[in-house]
Image (cartoon, rainbow, N blue to C red; front, side, top):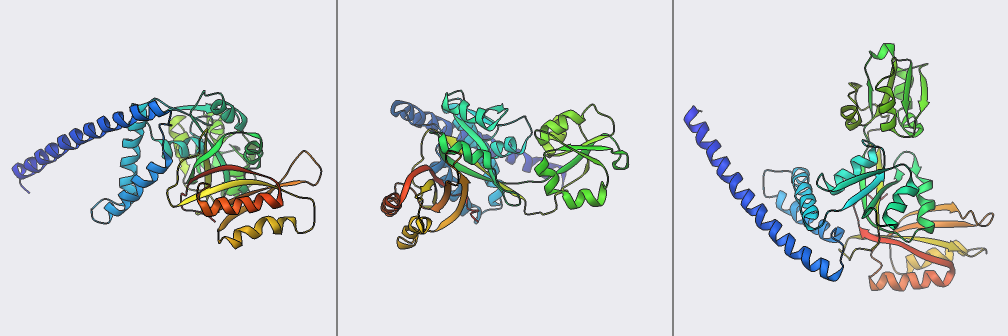
Length: 360
């Protein structure tokens, strides 16, 4: 290709970019108009239902073009993040510090244009949202290897906050240090992370001291100025704390996925592809759990998860966390829940939200 022809193509790209910017500006003007209407009605700026609708439309469009669905989603994630920030600046609380996997999951959901506030504990995340310090909170709820995050479940029991969205985020662990792997004497990370990398550690770091840290990001922060030490954490933690990655993707299983919940003060509308989470306390009698579950079969509602937790109020009394397909506003779901309530001590709707698709 001649230099002249190359310059011509680049000029054409510049012209296309200019048109894209004009269209983005038009889009943002419409966003502001919608934002004013939301403000009048007191509606939340972030709409999980509308977000899902946009991404579904993008997937259909991707089949006709050169960009993959993943690429289009990444582009529009940031466009939508900028749109949310333009309507009204919002803040997201997450289990910190910076560069934790909860931080990364939050970024994947809300993009780079909104504000983020790291919290020191699950309880602080809930408190920030309850007291309107933040608009939404992001917490891990279960891992495909380690199972449920029980402390998060316990907080959902007493909180008035609602689950309004979910995130499935693939976990990739990196070994980072300023020394050669043969000179590592100590490794810092969360206990769960050590468990997820157990076989790799046994093969490559046999006999090295493993020291639990509050988070994988806190581990990286500690290792930054400590000789002979390494941390296991995210690639973002490596960049943030200036630690070279000396071994990539050291988790024992590639399908290591954590499910996160977004908690807020309202339940989003129906999309047609939703999940509902409820908390159920069953009566103390033989067959009580069967009576609670029977309406799911009667109304053909698919239950995707059931998890038990001690009530902590009475010995041997348990709560059951149940996820199922459908929205609490759906008439069939309402009839089913009415029957569940007849057979339970109580039923609490924790939230209805667009399904992210990876139910187990």
